[in-house]
Amino acid sequence: MGGATVLIVGAGPAGLVLGNLLLAAGVDCLIVERSSRAHVERRARAGFLAEATVRVLVDNGLGTGILARGTRHDTCVFRSEQGEFALRYGALGREEAHTVYPQQHLVADLVAEFLRRGGDLRFGTPVSEVGGLDGERPWLLAHREDGTPYRLTGRYVAGCDGRHGVCRRRVPADAARPHRRRHGVSWLALLVGTPPALPAVTYAVHDRGFAGHMARTPSVTRYYLQCEPGTDPASWSEAALWEELDLRMRAERFGPLRRGPVLERAVVDLESDVLDPMQYGRLFLAGDAAGLISPSAAKGANLAVMAAETLARGFTAAVHEGDDEPLARYSATCLPRIWRAQEFSHWMIGLLHAPVGDDEESRFLRALRDSRLENLRTSRAHQHAFADNYVGV
Image 1 (cartoon, rainbow, N blue to C red):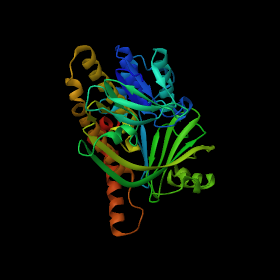
Image 2: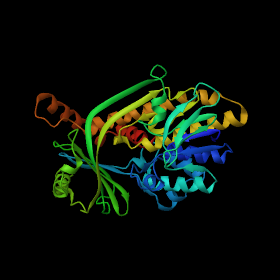
Image 3: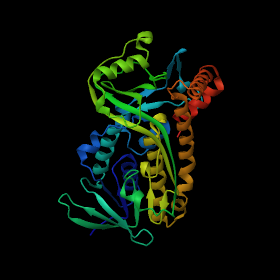
Image 4: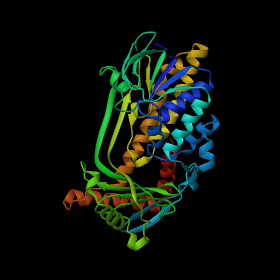
C-alpha cells in the first residue's frame, strides 16, 4: 500500500511537468514509470518548443537547461522543383520563434528537478491496472522490479503513459469518443551523428516523396524520408539513405549534405488521434494518452506541457480551495487548442505530401501541392497565418 494525492503514470514531458508544478504548489504527488531512468533520459523525440511552452517551463523554474543550451530557430525553408524559398516566421504573425532543445534533454532536466524538489519518482515500475475511478479513492496496481504487485491509492490519477498505456485503456468505450485518422503517409526517421548541414529546418517536396532536415544538437541532425507504409527501416543501407536524401533534398542544386553515421532509424506512420473528453471520473489524461498528433507540425511535446499546466491548476484548486470546477472543465479547456493543432498538422501533411504515381488523380494532387507552396511563397496573408499556426499552441 501507499500512495499520494495525485498518482501520475508516465515520466514523459506531461507527467514530469505536472509533477514539478504540483510539488511547487504543495500538492502531494507520485510518479511511476515502467522504463528505467537511463531509457527515458536517452529516448530521442521531438525538439521544437514553442514560445508559450518555453514560458511555462521558465516561469516555473524548469527552463535552466533550455536557457543555457537551447537554440533559437525562426526560419524554415521549402524546396521543390520550382526552387527554394526561406520563410522567416519569427518576423511574421505574432513574431514568435521555436527553441530547439532535444526532448531527452528536457526530460533529464525535469527528472533532476523533480527529485531535487523531493518528489517520489519510481522507475522500472509498470502499472497493470487502474481502478476505483468512479469513487473517492482511485488506485493503481503497480509492480516492483521483481514483479511483486502492490497497490497505490490516491485522490486523482493523471494518465501520462501514452496512447497505448493502461490509463487510456481504462476509459470505457461509452465514456469517451476517439477521433482517429490514418493519413496513409510514413516517414523513415533518422538520427545522424553530424552537425546540421543547413541553417534552418528544410522541407523538400519531390515526386519520389518528402524529405526533411531538422537540427537537434550541434553534433546530431534529424532527417526524414517519406517511405512506403510497412517499410523495414533496416532494409535501407546507409549508402542508399544518403543517395535518396541527396536526390530529394536536391543537394546537387542547393549544396551537399553533411554525411555521418546513422545513429537511429525508425518508421513513423503519420496518424492523428483525439479522445473527447480527456477525463473519466477521477482519471485525467494528458500528452499522447489524450491525443496523438502527427510530427508534421512538431506540436506533441508542446501540447503535453500546456495540458500539464492546465491540469496542475485544476488539481491545485481542488486540493487547496475545494474548487472542482477547473478539473470539470479540463477537457473543454484543452480540446480547442488540440483541435487547432490537429487542423494545422493536417494542412502541413497536405502541403508536404502528394501521391507519387503517374495516374490522373496523383498528378492533380501534386499540382495542388505545388499551388499551396506558391501561395505560401508569394502571399503575405498566407505567411502570417502560417507563422501563427506553426509556432502557436
